[in-house]
Length: 165
Image (cartoon, rainbow, N blue to C red; front, side, top):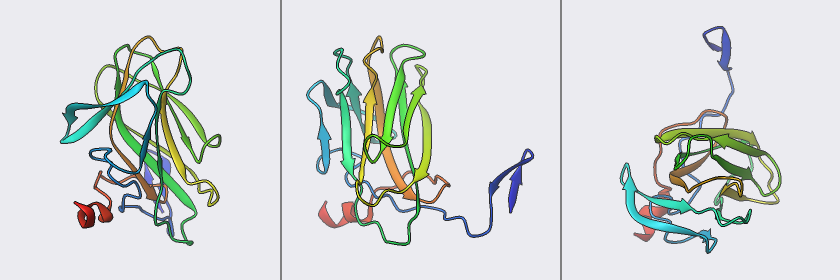
């Protein structure tokens, strides 16, 4: 067991990820469904393209991706992205597997990495990133990652990205 500041952060047997299950997460060229109010920018953050999640008053302004090649022994999933907002306090809405495991993360105007974890649902393998319709401005995300276990690791591309590029 590992303890930091009096809290258990990891116990023996916890899975630690590493492999990114989101394809093309550096440039969003394939395997991503981008809703019309959102767009891939020519700008980059840490060499990854940025997606602008524009607020058009509709809850459906965002992106989603199918998580691929998950082995049957994966029970827990951690997903993350770098994000910022035009306005402090605007929120990034993210869901694991559509309609389950929802988070509304308040953002700042500076880039930060945000991490979320929950139980894997083998039936629906989509991850969603949206801006809330109540937001005053644009949410930007870059370099999303989905990995096994409850411990987030540094962003890396999916191994399949090297095979297709």
